[in-house]
Amino acid sequence: MSDLRYRVLDWDSQWFGIPIGRADLPKITAASAAAVDAWARRQGLKCVYVFEENGIQANESFAGFKPMDIRVEYELDPAVLAKGPSDASFSMRPDEQEAVCSLARQLFTATRFSRDAGFPPARVRELYAEWVRRDSAGCVPGCRVIRADNEIIGFVTGRTDSTDATRGSIGLLGVAEAYRGRGLGAKLLDYVCRAFVKTGVKRVTVVTQEINTAACHLYEHGGHVIARGCWYHRWYDDAGSGSRNTHGFSNPI
Image (tube, rainbow, N blue to C red; front, side, top):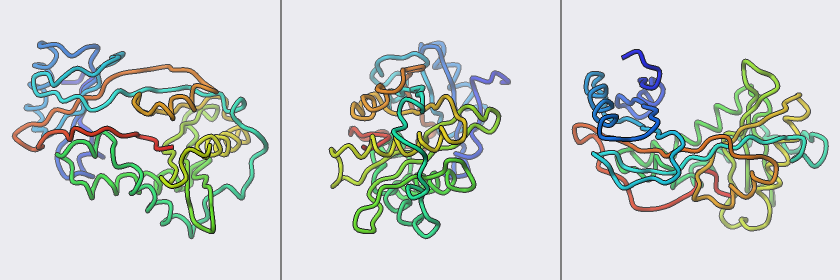
C-alpha cells in the first residue's frame, strides 16, 4: 500500500528488533481497523502504532487496538518565553552527556513505550538516552541543563528544522524527581528558547501527553495547541503482552 498514512518504521524496527509500522487514521472504526490489520499482516509487522487524528479521548481497547496516551502538540513563540540573552553556561558540556543520558533513563519511565509491556524495559529506557545523544550531535541548540552541586538535575533538548531555519522543535524536557515543583521546567524552557531566538528561530513545536498537566500549563503560557490525537498500539502474533495500566508523563517537569 503506497498511502502515506501507512508506513513501515525502519528506525523503530531496528531499535526494538521487530518489524514495526505506523498508521494515521481520521478515526478508528471497524473498517479502518480491519484495513490496518490487513496491511500489517501483508507487511509481516509485529506492532503498529496507530494515531487517531484529532482524537480527544482514547477509547477502551477496540479490536485489539490498545489506547496508550493522548498526544498534544504545541506551537510556541520563543521570543515570548525567552527571559534574556543566550548563555553558553546553560549548555551541556561533552563530559556531562552520560550524566544527562542517565537522568533520561530514570525520568521517562511512563511513556506509551514503557507502558506497553511488549517493549523490553531496558530498551525503552535506552531509547531516551539515545534521544539525548541524537539531539546533542551537532544539533542547534542541542542540550541545555540545570546543575546543582555539580550534578545534572534537569535538561532540555532541541533542534532547528533542517529545511526551515526559522522553525525548531523541543525533544525532551525533564527534571529530577527530587527537584520538581520548583519552577525548573520553566527555567529549562527559558534556556532553550533563548538559544532558539539567538539562531533566528521564530516558531517552536513541542509534544507532550494530555495527562501531563504541568507540561501543558507550561507550554500554554507561550503558545497554543496546534494538534491533538490518540495513540493506540496494535500487536500481532502475540508479539506483545499488552499494556500496563499505569500513567505517566512524556516530559517530566
